[in-house]
Image 1 (tube, one colour):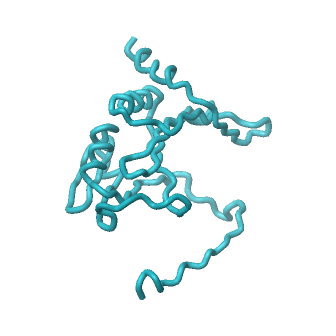
Image 2 (tube, one colour):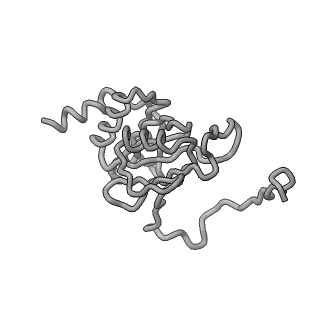
Image 3 (spheres, helix red, strand yellow):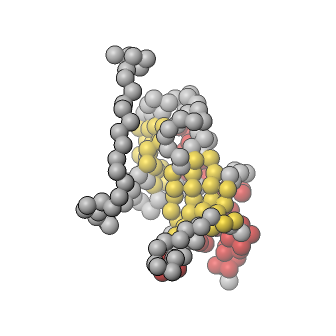
Length: 182
């Protein structure tokens, strides 16, 4: 069966409600694997600009990480060499989110982006976190963010999480670099 005659999967619906048995709170997203058009270009962005380290390179693939982990991001051209981004209106990954350990480290990421002349699509304070939004060379959405300590997250009067989307002051964020030096 070729791609044109292959039936589309049926859209299954699920009732949304509390899980009868919640997932273990220790579960984490381990890594993301991105299809890219040009592996060297992707490595120049993720390693050269953002500072990830190359842990392994294979024909058509590379694995990168922070802090010696085996890989946080996989990049490959197995199905996408020379390809173009999916068209608007299609399903797929909205963005990958890279969590920085502190506000000063997020400020350093912003400094790197400015030095590489990479534009931001947005910058938001969500109450629980502060985030920078941009596109990688393959037009994948990328969020760089840090989480505030959980005890500082905004809550409603009845204790529910109250995330917001407000403008992030980029000058103040960059000021973290100077404050960290003093």
